[in-house]
Structure formats: structure tokens, C-alpha cells
Image 1 (cartoon, rainbow, N blue to C red):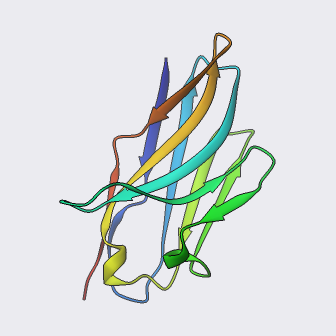
Image 2 (spheres, rainbow, N blue to C red; image 1 turned 120 degrees about the vertical axis):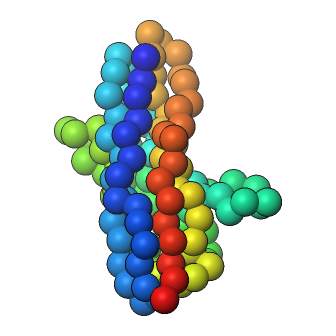
Length: 119
């Protein structure tokens, strides 16, 4: 009922930048919190950044000052601008949204996009 399409991952050198996008489509009344998570093989998935519908943001400490999450409510899209990338930012990044579908609060995940930071 809700599809998430992520884009923007790839290979970048340390210190470089990437911008991830995630567009939601389908049958939903509204989208609440939108977020980006990341996962490295063998480790648990961690929340990187989240943004409420009103624009309140939250970040994991390791990306504060380097990453910026934003959203375009008209386009049902969330972005993650990643600057000053470090090798430890290498991971699969997943988009996650909370949406209201037929009056129920539902949670959806994208398939993930790989970010590799390496020289």
C-alpha cells in the first residue's frame, strides 16, 4: 500500500558529500515521522536522523554537524544531506516512515541504498 523509493547512494571519498532521497507513494492519509537508519553487516540497525511532520529533527551524536535531514511534505520525500563523510559512515542506509493508512498508524521501510566511503 505504501512504497518507498530510495536513491543517492554510492561511492565517495572521505570528506566528500552525498545526498540521499526517499520518495513515498501509495494510499496513505498522511506521513508522520520520516527517518533514516543505517546498518553495517554484523551490527544492529541504528537510527541516524529523524524529522517530524512539523520539522523537528533529531540526530545520532556521530553525525551531528555533518548530516542534515529535511523533508518536502508536498512531494512526500525525505532527504539526508551527508557532508564530511567518514569511512565509518559506510553502511546500507534505510528510509523509514510512519504513515496513516485507512486510519491506522503504520510503519514502512525502504529496501536500502549502499553508501561506501573509501579512498
